Each structure stands twice: as structure tokens, then as C-alpha cells.
Amino acid sequence: MSRLEILKTYKIYIGGQFPRTESGRYYPLKDKNGKLLANVCLSSRKDFRNAVVAARGAFGGWSGRAAFNRSQILYRIAEMLESRKAQFIAELQQQGSTAKAAEEEVNQSIDRLVYYAGWCDKYIQLYSTVNPVASSHFNFSVPEPTGVVAIIAPEDSALLGLVSVVAPCISGGNTCVVLASESKPLCSVSFAEVLNSSDVTGGVVNILTGTSKELHSHFSSHMDVNAIVYCRDNKDEIKKIQQNASLNVKRAFIYHKNWNSAEVENPYMILDLQEIKTTWHPIENIGAAKSSY
Image (cartoon, rainbow, N blue to C red; front, side, top):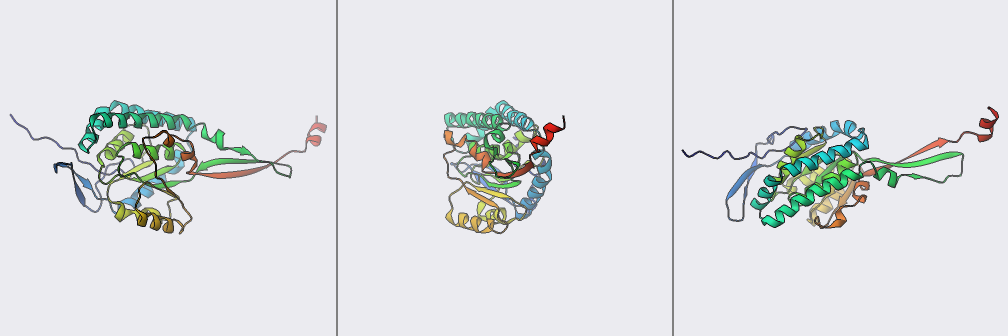
């Protein structure tokens, strides 16, 4: 007896939940042969605002976690992705990758998560300093997470590009709102399912699908976003993002990287999304301290 296939519904991911876009809009995603793969949510400005609220609500708890615990959680994400390799390889192939390239991309994504998991409790030691000062003080500079980061993920790298920008962001204690690839969004939504079944608190990573043309201005102008990462090459969008970023002096990073290369495995990508906090501490009078014994 024949049966109808139950096709997967690809939704957005906000605050640990999988809502449909509030606008009710979608766009059809087709393969190179014109076969319909899915109807994908066309996220709106309201969806983005909801995601920022979720990211801000999760920031205190996530940034306040022990660095070692964040490391454990990123490693757990890698474990969950490893357990679902076959699904991601199949989705990459649906979106145009060869079987070999798809398997390599999934393996690299897993390894990249493990790489940044290893840096979670180490980058602060590397980038902290004790500064020389003329007065009787200790002066320390320590990196702290920037806050809520808006990310427009690479268009041509369905999974690896997404992982390569999300992992350094959250390993440094930030939370984020990510716009997935418009032409290759399937793995992004499935990656949200991986996050949901791991130990990542809802709201730490929020994933939207839709168009950069519609959303880049909102991503860069929202006053409760502390930094924006843009991974595409539209010159008009880059100019608008840089102009909007000045409105609340948010950091704007324009990444043009080969996401398959080793240069992307770099602790400086964590440092990009950190603020340096400097603390002064008075030095007790040593002579007075000795005389008290």
C-alpha cells in the first residue's frame, strides 16, 4: 500500500523554540533541477526583534557560566552533530554538493566546534595583561563578551560557514541572532535542532531564514545589538551596515574568508567579539604590612 511522504517543515529558531515566521510568508527552495525541496520561512523585522529579546535574555546566564562549562557544551554540540552526520550530508547533497564534498564539510564543521570548545577556557589567559603603571596600583586588562551579536552568515557555505561564525561568538560568552544562507538554508535549520537537543540554553543562538536584502538594515540598526558580523560581498549592504553601526557605536566586522581553510580556526575570531575591561587595584603599603607582624 503506497503512502505519502511526511516532508520536514523548516521553521526558524528563537529562544529555544521553533515558531513559524510571524508574517506567515515563505519562499520556495528548489534544487538545481527545479524540484521543490521545502517552503522556507521568510523572516520579518518582528522575528528579528523577538530573536534579539531572546538573545538579550539569555546573555546574563550564558556569559556568567564557567568557561570550562561553555567548553563542555560546545563539545556536546559537536557530539550531537556527529550523531546526525548522515542527515546533514543528505541535505548538503540536496543543495548541490557532491557526496565527497558534503561529507568533508560536515566533518570540518564537527572539528571546528571541537577546536573552539578547546579555546573557551584558554583565550582569557592569552589575551589578559598586567599593565605597567606609575602609581601604586595593579592594573589588569581582561576580555569580556560584547553582548548580543547579529550575524549574517555566509551565503555559499551552508553548514561550515554558519558553524565558523557561531562557534567563536558563543565560545566567548556572547549570544547571537543569525541569518542563514538564503539559497542553502536547510542545514541551518537542522543545526538549530542539534543546538536544541544539546545543552545550549534557549536564546543563546537564534537562527532566522530569509533575505539579507530585507533584513540587513534591521540587523545593523537595532539599538540592543552590540556587534554585527557580515559574511557576504554585497557592497551596498556593507556600506549600509557600517553606517547603521555608528548609530550606537556597535562593532561591525566584514568577513571575506575561505571557510574551508585553517585561517578560520583562529582565537582572534573570539577576540573580535570581546571588549577589554581594565581594573585598577591599589597596592598595600608593604612597609606598613611588615610592621604589623
